[in-house]
Image (cartoon, rainbow, N blue to C red; front, top):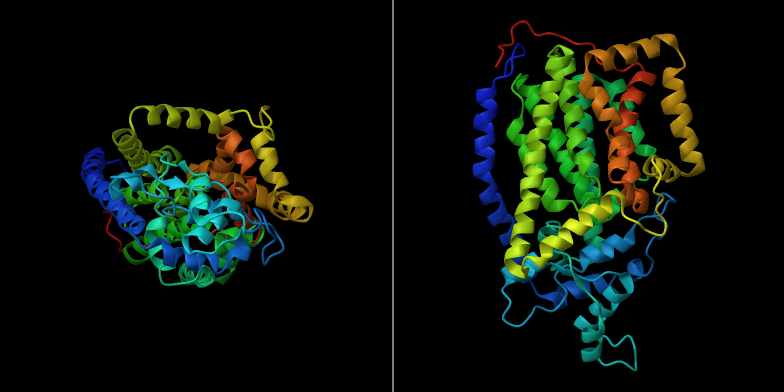
Length: 442
C-alpha cells in the first residue's frame, strides 16, 4: 500500500482472504474446545482443588496491594467441569459452554469431582446435582483450550506461575525491541503507565492474562514486520487474525486494548520511519486496520452465536440480544444511568493515591509547558491515529457503560492507551521521523 494512495483492490483481496480463512478458524476453534472439554475432570479438579484457598474470596488483595477479580477466574476455571447431557456430543457441550457462576459452587464441584466430602451431611451425588451452573454460550471461552490441558498436568499455582513468567517474557521482548528501535528513554516512557494501573490481575489470573498476551503478541508481530521490513503495506490480515483471537480468548475483558495497543505500536513505527501521511490519509489507514480487526472480531463472535442457535435453538439468539442491550446501559443496582458514569467509575478504580498520580503526572505535567502543549497539539493534528487511540478508552467506557461500571476493577486498565502518549509527551520521547531514502515503497 503506497503512502500516496489507498489500493482498494488490495484491500478487497485481503478481505476475501480473511472471509475464506474464517471457516478454518471456526472449525479449529470449536475443535480445540471440544477436545479440551473431553479431558479427565478428576485430574483437573484435583489440580484446582489443591489451591482451593485462592478461590475462597471473590476479590482478594494481590501481591501489589490491590484487589483482583478472582470471581471471574472461578467462572473461567469451571468451564468443562459441569456434567455433559445424555447423548450430548463434545461439540455440543463446547458450544453450550456450561459454567459455574460463583467460587463457593466451584469449590463444591471440585470437592465432589475428587471424592472429597466437604459437608458431612451432604452426599457426593447430592452435591453434584445441587451445584448451580448456566450455559454461557455467548462467549467462545477459548482460554479453556489452553488452561484445561495445562491443568491436566499442573497444579493451578504452577500454571499461574507459568502465566506470570510468560507475561514478563513478552513485556521484555517488546521492551527490548522498542529499546533497539527507539531508545531507552522511549521504552521507559512507553512502559511507565503500566505501573500505574492495577496490573496484578493481568499478570496472575489466566482469564485476564490471556487478553494481554494476545495484545502483546499482536504488538510484537506488527513491530517485527515494521522494524525488519519497514514496509508501507498495512498488516490487514494480521489485524483480522487479532480480531478473531480477541473474540476467541477474551470475554469482554479489554477487547479495545487488544486492538488499540498493537495499532499504537504500528503507527509509532510508521511515525519513526517517516511513513506519516496527510491526516485524512492516515485516518483512512487507521480506519482500514480497524475494519479488518472488527471483521475478525464480529464474524468470529457471530459464528459462535450461529453455533449456539444450531445447538440450542433460536431462543439462544434472544438471550444474546438481551445481553448486548444490557451491557450497553442496562439497569443494575450499582450502575448509574447518567452520561459520564462509566468514565467516572473507571477513574475511581485508581483510588486516591494512584488517581492523583494519573492527574498530576500524566495530565497536568505534560500540559504544563507551552512547548509540550504545542508538540502534543501538532502530533494530534497531523497524526489523527494517535488522537483516536488516546480517546478510545473514554468512548468505550461510555458506550458500554453498564459493563464498564460493574467491571471497573479491570476495564480501568484501558486508560493506558491514553497515558502512553501523555507519558511520551512528558518525557519528550516522541520519536524523530527518519526517512530511509533507499527504502522501496510497497
